[in-house]
Length: 637
Image (cartoon, rainbow, N blue to C red):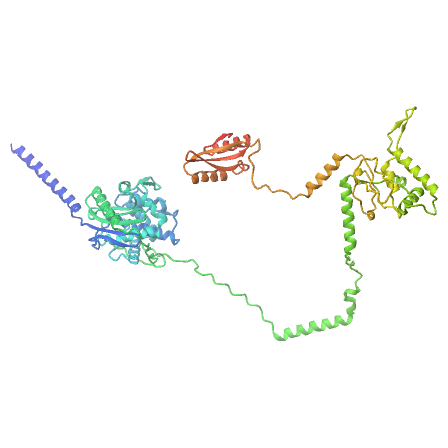
């Protein structure tokens, strides 16, 4: 019985000690004071506040300032997002939550930022602090100076991660100000706080605030925090329409209770915020970076192996590049300069005396420039006119007569006399009337013989009739010098009509009268075998060359061979269809160069296609688009 009593007593004592331990462990959670602040992020107006200026432990909300300084350092060129920081022993000994870094490891700043913002990794925050300022203490001092410049008057930082430490305090008002400052000063990085997870160099880390982001409509950040002394803290940001509200809560009893209370605070902010408010961005705080060199002492003394060493960063870059001074030129004595000038003048005079100046004159040169051509307007005009006449005659089918043609067309004395009588209207003294009658009869017989058809004799020979056109040219030839050029081969339509002549040489030729040509051209038109089709072809070619060329402004799809098209599918709006056409056109500009972009409305939707293609072009274009992963179809409308 005594043994059982002792065992029971010991068990009861153990249960009592365990109970007291649980009470002691849970008492800070219920004892964490509550504080809250709701602010309109557009203009900084306070909508709700409760214990908002009470100094409390901020927990991991501290990392918002750590990240703000990291963004500031990148902006001012202190570091880059790809700068690799070395992990120290102090970073690996930080109380977890941790990223799991190892001493001596080198990791990029961009991964440290993701780990601190999403996973709230304490070791990543220490590496950021040491990489930017050289030590945790120097970085914490810079955090405090930046907070003062930002208007956070009741905040003092002692570390970059937010673990409970004496003197490391902040308020709900100051953390709300910090969240608003992050949104306006670094909007390019603010989306990190809304990511559900991301790769942090070592592993893929989740966001500690993902439950609230998924549960509350319009939530886009920002940071959670928890320690036993601080409770469950959260600074949240949400946007709905034109309204943007930021709320901060300290002292939550659990994650669920904290999220529910912050949702109530944001609902209060959206219900009380005005719909239209002029946005007033907060002023960016003064830069507290490398321009201010601060050597801070380690908190635990210089002999503490875990304390950070002093680091002084020296700025060696040249801020200004002044213009270099000109190199000094050697100064010669004035007496030497005068002597040199006098020597030059004496040499010039001596040379002028020895040489005659006329020998150097341009007139003494045996080079005579060619005379400038004199422009004669009449001569130039005549030459241009003659060239144009020759070009027109050649286009009409004329050719230059040979010397034999010229000899055959020498004027006959009898025909000249007859022509003279015809012009005078009677007989002349040189030619009696009897001779005139005989000459007229001979001329009439000649014309009838020329008009008679070709006959064959009994021996099989052929009687060739004279050329009436050649005869007409001989009879109508004017007195004067022979023409310099004779053209043959022209059709009978170019023959001139005789004027004041009793003889009608065209009576039996059945040709139309042609316009008279100027006598001064020196051109004799004769008949040739040139057909009317050849002449019409020459005239059409000349007319075609003289026409103004047409400019085709668009591709016609009416060609029988271009009836194929490439369809890109049906879209809900015309904007989407046109954007698809532009994207495909940019991707396959060569394959669709001859196609025409079309958007057709079909049953309330819009079909995008390229028309006016051949079957080969359409097939090749669709095959290339399919290789790029784009939908298309070839059809013939």
